[in-house]
Image 1 (cartoon, rainbow, N blue to C red):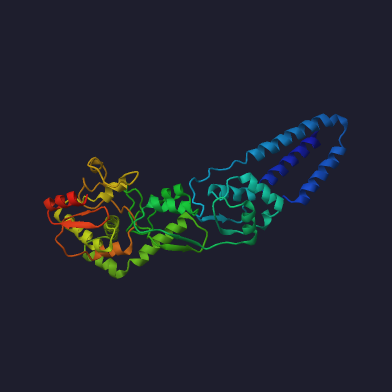
Image 2: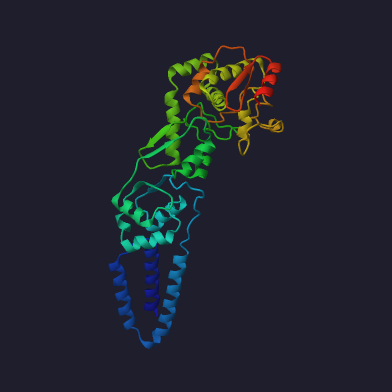
Length: 377
């Protein structure tokens, strides 16, 4: 009976390896079957009842393990023309790769992929690297790419004015990072002394991940992408720009914070230095900045117009209720917005309002401002 239990244990180990994509070749399977046949022929009739029961259990185990190869949730509403990046690391099994493909929406059925890999006997021929796929790519095409090692250059673009949440979602949608991991690490990521960690700041690196087009030369990761984007901004802040900020009595944190407000308020280039001047003037007079963009930052979804009720939200970011700058940036400003803060326009304007096309209209008094609001809104 001990020999029987030993054989069953050996069979279970084999099953586990096969389901994980290890040691599975037609030759190994044939050898295993021959070995089992030889062992069965050596059994006496007294062992047959126990052997039969054991193999029924083994087949049940095989079925349960196979059916337990559940597919993970597939991203919804994927654009069929969207490019999805999937990284294949050394040592990943066919099952592991199937998990990643399902997770990102490249395939919808892991079992189908796994079976085709086993049938093609290609699991040990896959090459590591980053691959580009489209949603619902046929398994045969995926296998051929993995065997040929058709890796790709990973490139992504973050537009000016994107916040941390939007950056995380875009990178996740492109299959580069896990969205939740990115948001979690963004809360405390502060690689430079001018980036603050504070209880009132939602994401420490908000505003300090420079909006640009990037090419990855290594496997995508949250840490790697954050480091690259933060370094980009730090490099662009030249000694001359830092000196100019000091002349305006602005820290780098304050510079980027104000630039983020200008970025979100100005749709057109000509408006940026004027809006920056309005903000400087209000700060000098001790007026609240009253910029809708800080209210929008507090909302779950953007609104076309901020309501009176919205301006009553209790938050250190609510510039209708607090004086001075918010605790930190509300988005990633581009260089044009940063330059506008460093070199604001020379005007007497104190108010502005954008029309439905995004063009701003300026005034010196609140009465004039109200009249313009009635006209353009």
